[in-house]
Amino acid sequence: MNTGIPPLDILLNHGREIFTFDFGRYFMAASITFAIVWLLRRTVLKTRKIQGREATFTDMRREFLQSLQSVFVYVIGICFLIWGREVGVFYDIIGESLGWATDLAMLAAIIIAHDAYFYWAHRFMHHPKLFKTFHRAHHRSITPTPWAAYSFAMPEALVMFMFVPIWQFFVPTPGWVMFVWLNFQIIRNAMGHAGFEFFPRWWLSTPLTRWINTTVHHDLHHNGGFNTNYGLYFTFWDKWMGTEHPKYAEKFAEVVGRGRIEKQPETQTVPA
Ligand SMILES: [Zn+2]
Ligand SMILES: [Zn+2]
Image 1: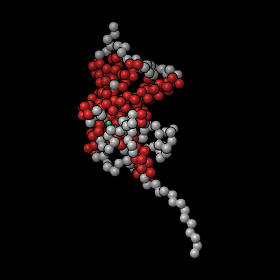
Image 2 (image 1 turned 30 degrees about the vertical axis):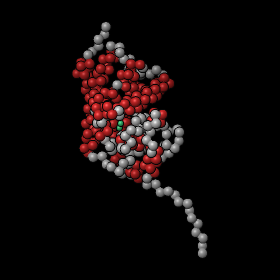
Image 3 (image 1 turned 180 degrees about the vertical axis):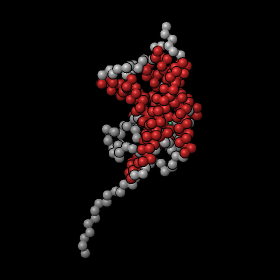
Image 4 (image 1 turned 90 degrees about the horizontal axis):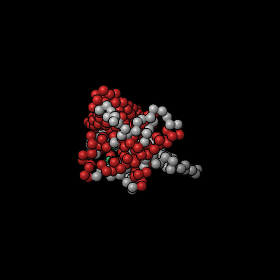
C-alpha cells in the first residue's frame, strides 16, 4: 500500500512554495483592489464608498494578520491534501484539459458548488453556539476593507479550506480549472470586502445580472444586516431561504445614485 510522503515532510520540503502561492494570491488581490479603490475615491466615483465610516489602520492591520494566519492554516491543509492525493483518498489534479466545453462546465460547477458550500457553512457559523469560536473574528470588521478577504479565526479558515478536499474527493479536476477558480474566489472575496461599489447602476434592474452579488450585498452583512446576505457569489440561496436583506436593492440604489443630479423637466416660460 502506498503510504505517500508524510504531510510533515511535504510541509518541510515544499511549505515555502505553497505559502508563496497562497499568500501571493491573497496579497495581490487585496492590494490591487485596495489600490483601485484608493484611486477611484479620487475621482467623481468617490460617492461609491458604501459607508460613511472609515476603516482605521488598526482594522486593516487586524484583517491582514488574521488573513496571514488563515494562509498558514491553508498551507498545512494543502500538505494533507497532497498526501491524500498520493494515497488515493482524493482525485489527483489532471494535467491536461478535458476539452473546452467540459472544462468550462466544470469551472461553472465548482463555482456553483462553492457558493452553496459557503452559504451553508457561513449560515451555520452564525449559530449562537458556533459564532464565537468560528466567525466572530471575521465580524470584527464593521467597515471591511479588501484585506479582510481571508480574515478568519483558525477554525473558520479550516472550514473554508475544507471545500477543496470535499470537491477533490468527488471530482477529478484539471489543474487550470482549479487555478482559475482559486483566483476567481480571492478576487470576488477582496471585491466583496472593498467597501466600495464597483457594479454599474443598472445591475439590479435586469434579470441578466441581478443574481450576481454586488459589494453592497456583503457590506450590509458586515454593517447592520448581520443575519442576512450570507451568500458569496450569487443571490440565489439568500432569496430561496428568505435571508436577503430587505433593503438590499434600496441600499444599492442609494449608493450608486449618490451625487447624480436628477434631470428636471424643462419649464416653459410664457412671456408676459
Ligand atoms: Zn457572517
Ligand atoms: Zn465578510
